[in-house]
Length: 119
Image 1 (cartoon, rainbow, N blue to C red):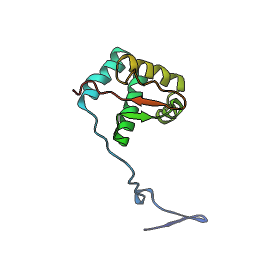
Image 2 (cartoon, rainbow, N blue to C red):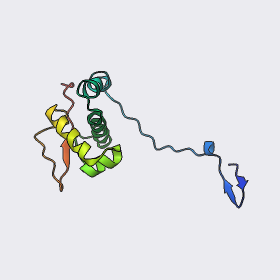
Image 3 (cartoon, helix red, strand yellow):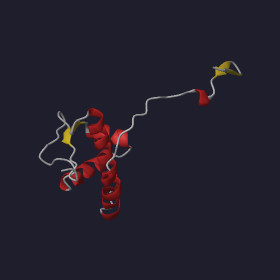
């Protein structure tokens, strides 16, 4: 690998650095074709769509329907405020995109992600 002298330091060109940590996830066409226009356009709640995508990603990564992630973690990892995440989660419960029967607490922040279009 080539190194270039820059003053007192050596640098490596950025195109020589390869980061292979990207994972791929599949998203059902329904999420993009129907759910996104519904939540973002009709409901005017883009943050709700972002939170749902985040929860879908976590569920896929863990290969489970239930994810245990705190409000603060969701807020930090999505770039949203904690109160915006709370409002989004309430809306997702009302829309039955997360299971309203599963009650998340501070000590057990479990949420069950639902995919009602899959029967």
